[in-house]
Image 1 (spheres, rainbow, N blue to C red):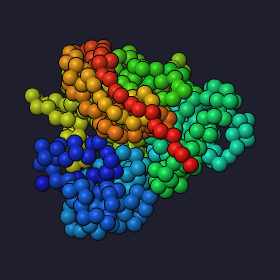
Image 2 (image 1 turned 180 degrees about the horizontal axis):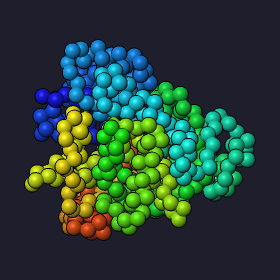
Image 3 (image 1 turned 90 degrees about the horizontal axis):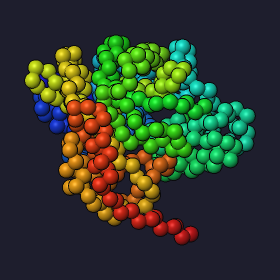
Length: 420
C-alpha cells in the first residue's frame, strides 16, 4: 500500500475529501496538521501535531513520528504548509518543490521580482511596513492602485484605491486587519508588510495544473465571469472549460509555465491566477498547492469508463502512480462561492430546496453555521457556502449557479457594537 503524507490546517475544507479519496484508491494517509498538541487526537485522524511558524522543529517532529514507515509522496493543502512540505520532501528524498521555490511562491514581493526577472509582465509595485505613514508612501504609488497584505489569501485585505483619500483609508483598514488576533497568531515574519501594486485591468482566469519534474500539465482553466474591479476582490464564480479563444488560452498557459520556472517550482500541484488584457497575461500568483476549499469538487476525471475526483488524482500523482491517462470530464462545471453580503450574525437560511431544484445544479453546501459571526470582505476570509452545477455548456453551468443563488435567502443580524 502506498502511503502519502498530507500537511494541512485543521480548518481546511478538503481534509475529509482526501480521506474519502484515499479509501477509494487504497492509499494510506498520514496527516500533519496544526491541531492542539495538548489534546489526545481531538479530530480522531491520528494527525501529527505541527506548528507552521516553527518549521524546523515541526519537520523534526514529523520525521520522528514517521519513524521507519516509508512515505511515497507529500501533499500540501493550503498556503501555509507549502514550505514545510517542501522541506519534508527534501528530507525524505521525495519529488517535490524545493523549499526556496515554495517560499518564493508564497511571498508576493519575491514572486513579483522573480516574474520580472523571467521576462513576464509585472505591475509596478512597492512593499512597505504597515507601521509606515501613508503620506510617506504616496510618492511611490501609481493610481489606481491595489493594496494587499503579503501573508493573507482569499482576497482578504485586498483593496483598490483610486486617489489619495482612498489610499489612506485602505492603508488604515489593512493595518487593522493585520493587527487582528488571528493574523498575529500566525507569527509570520511578513505579517506586517503591505504590498502596493498598480491596478491591472482585464479579465481574470485561474489555472489548475500538475508539475511533473518541471513539466506543466494544465488540468483545468477557469473563467471568472464576475468582474473583479474592486474596491474589494471577492471571487464568486469559477467556470470550466474557459470560453476564451485558443490564442488567449495558449498565452495564459505559456505565461504560467514561465512563472513556475521563474519561481523554481518542480513537482506537484500548482494553482495560478492570471489577468489578461490588451498587453497580454499578467500572472498574479502561482501557488505551490491545489485549488482551495470545496472548489475542487468542480473537477472530475475520466478514463476508460471510470471517474475519479480531483483529490484522487492528486493522491495518485503524489504516490508516483501514472495519471496522464486521466482527462477532465466532458461536462462543463461551475461553482459559486456564496459571498457574505455584510458582516453580522447568521440567523437563518431559506430556499435551499428551491435552489437545489434548478436544472443542472449538482449540490448546495452551506458551510456557515447558524449563530456564526460573519465578516464580509475585506476583513473576512470565508464564504456562506458553495453551489455546484454541471451542464453541457459553460453558459448553462454558470446560469444554473446564478439562478440557484437568487433563490437563497440569508438572514444576517447586524453585529452588536462593543461597549468599552
